[in-house]
Length: 277
Ligand SMILES: *[C@@H]1O[C@H](CO)[C@@H](O)[C@H](O)[C@H]1NC(C)=O
Image (cartoon, rainbow, N blue to C red):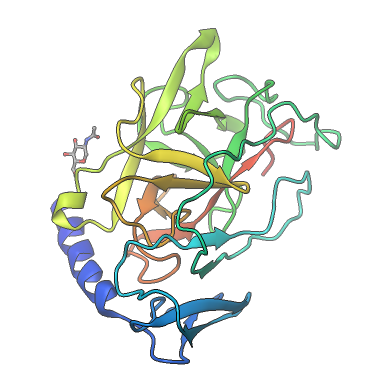
């Protein structure tokens, strides 16, 4: 199975690396499934939410070392009716994500907990000071929460139900799941597929810190960057698998050549008092 995925993603990567949009061509926008890179000497510029276009000038985009940022509307408000949003990829003016942006850690909830709130989870239904929920914000995994596949234990990372959402802290570039008794688990990225051309990488929770790369919040969106592992969109994740899908790092562009069996996702933090569906 893994070998098949490896072959598949290697083929996909080969095609993806060559696809460039022509001069003045479309290179992004909600629903766009064509190329997201422009020919050398042209830059993909966000025009609006629905349309990005190749404009003359700027650095060549034929390499994949650029790290476009993901624009996602803020979703840390306490609204429970927010619609899923699809981010638009644009070329950044700076290629490094901010690593100094720290989410609020002690902001009080802005509204009373809604009914039907979480009843379980490693640290219970109420967000403890300094912790965050981290959740997907796109269908079909809208408001599925980052957690261990076996709740509160070292196991693969999944998009799971709000009732078992993990409480998370971002510490020194690590996504740290808080457990009772002061224990923690770290979100790790399995980078072993990079050498063979994998375009998406599985993640899992382990007792030891993630040795590769840095997690950060850009706005309220979770990003991951690692030296030597180029990403087209540092906030692009994938939900892969049936049932409770696994959390994967997408090394390719958001919503472009999505691997079979996967759905594109971005992950946002949420600091409401309780995880909500
Ligand atoms: C990482 O993935 C490879 C397959 O690509 C697997 O053999 C290995 O056990 C995984 N490592 C961890 C720590 O999960």
